[in-house]
Amino acid sequence: MSTTDLGTARLGDPTQQRADRAIVRRSRAGRVVIHVCLVLAALLSIFPFYWLVAMATQSTAEIFGYPPKLTFGGQLLANVRDVVTSIDLLDALLNTVFVAGASAVLVMLFDSLAAFAFAKYRFPGRDKLFVVLLVTFLLPGSLSLVPSFILVSRLGWVGGFESLIIPGMANAFGIFLLRQIASSSIDDSLIESARIDGAGFFKTWWFVGVPMMRGGLAFLGIFTFIAQWNDYVWPLIVLVDPERQTLQTALQSLNTIYNTEYGMVMAGALISVVPLIVVFALGARHLIANIGAGALKG
Image (cartoon, rainbow, N blue to C red):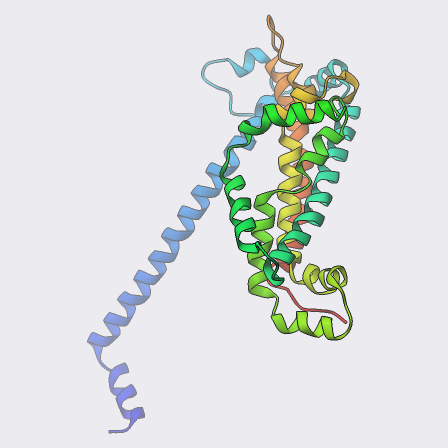
């Protein structure tokens, strides 16, 4: 019997047809379950932000009312006006944008240089130095608060933005991430070709390493920007000048000892979140577009 005859006989078999239909139904049911789970997970992820927006539009009495009010109120403009009149919001925003942007640029610069060297160049003590780097990555950041403050105070940086930017301009996480990307995506033949063409380390890093690590650099830049934007403890320690406050430390002053307007606090938190959403939306497009890219353009 030929293959065509076998296929025809199989199609004409009622038992096989019922089995095929059962497989199709199970497949459809599985897809439905997966989509329902994804929708529920998305709703659970979105709900905290929705609750923040809802509380920013309510008064303190409405926030602590029972049952909780899950709908929007009419106090958003009043709460935002109270935030603007209570703190120097514009200066705090500009200070935070400067600190977070400068930190992201410097981290991408120095981490990519170190990662490219660790991944594609051999030098004495390379592996041991990388192990030491990983050990520092495992240490909690709170352990370095006191030594870091002593260091920046002896350098005379207390109260200045350099105390926020320079200590964090390179980190073990970014070097490890970019090293893994460079090791897997940059072929050694590209490095050899660059050397034959007379390119030195920095030229090879710029024309070979950076294009191949664009996706990782985009992620690292977004991650660093968000981390610096949300940083609270270190700016609270070193920024002693009220005119040089970042957004998080400025918003902290909205919490008073005797009376806190939580609607105003939630409005301030909403204001601090909106720029992060914009940055992530813009950066995510670049990240998705380049995460699989890694070719030289010449």
